[in-house]
Image (cartoon, rainbow, N blue to C red; front, side):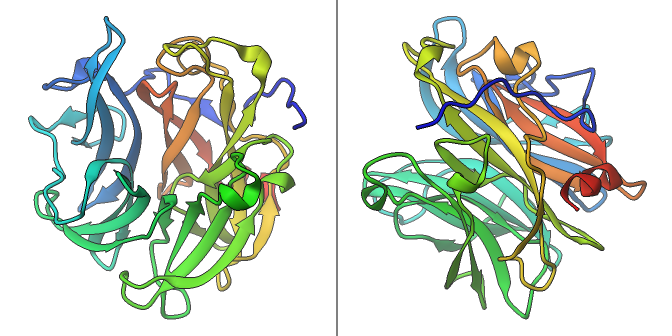
Length: 328
């Protein structure tokens, strides 16, 4: 496994000066790690569904996971609802937790992709809502799959998602995971699976890739973020765990508007790497940036929402033309 050297963020991306924009102190119920949120604009407001691994920050203890809801008028300052949402009471056998939400507005409703840990493997699901109180579970995949993101409109008459299966046996028992795409006529039945981007094709990854924020439409193509992971045994202990050797960075690629299985442009370096102290030095798992939301504003600004160090939720901005120049 070739080791990856020093990596840094591209100057086109500016971290918000108020980072982190959401952390455990902002949540009115038991919370420890607030990260990997899905963020979108819905009915004129910014909406965030965040992952909360609750327990004790001081004691470095975690007791479970739930999903919380926050809203904002400006995408920076957030108000958290008083109780978690999306409680697991569905008739799905041996469910342990739902986590890592991704939000997409499609056909007037909010679609949430989520990961689901069960005693029989990791599964990916899609749920629809109008009010964040009631959810229609549309599909839950077979094991093992994770990190799904839904495109915000049908393509060729079908719903489309990016996803990251876990082919452990066929990859020699190692973490060598890639980004795939599938489509569906009804959000329930998914097929036509195709490989989009392989880990060996990304020079700043040696372990795995996965979808990040749901794609945004531009005249040039579907602009989308992905997470890339490299491992270095020399990193030793970082964060809470006895051993954390991974680094998570953010990649950027452009997919064809009519055939999104085709990558038509990709930035050869990371768009973002752990540079800030709250990404690199502090938290549960250091050296981690995990993108979960990307919003294109009317003035061309792109808001990028990401989890940092698996501990807090952060915001960075860029201009869409600057991002397109990196991939064209």
